[in-house]
Length: 164
Image (cartoon, rainbow, N blue to C red; front, side, top):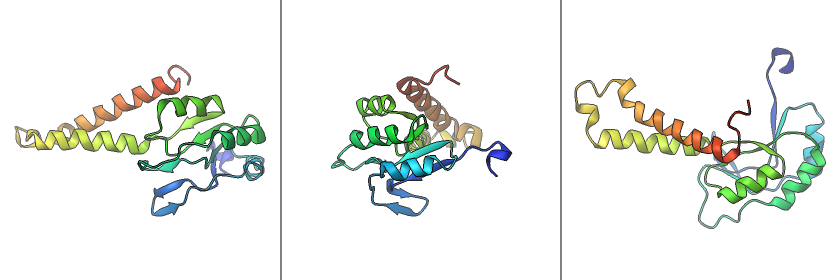
């Protein structure tokens, strides 16, 4: 039904650690055979739990399980894989994940964090009290620009510039 409306389908297998939309996951590693079965249902993208976490990573995070990712990639063939919880993953791990079939990386938390930091700075500097600095277009502009800079940086890291 989704495909008939031109809508792509992304499925999540395993449990992505952390909290998203009120759902808390423990971060179980996805089973490659379950990933294969889900991929064969006709989805467009597959997000698999490989030690990744929604939100910010704790200091004691063990890292991504590349052995599991390799097995999932082998089991799912040419299915584009998705890495949920990309915020805070070191660059070398990001590049390794891409080399093992990850085609999409979600970094929403990072965008939210840079937006909040830039907006907070604007307010703490009292710029919202100067002239019409309270205008939402002015108040939110630093956060908007921070997100743009973050996304540009990520596009460079992910190798996605001029790929669409």
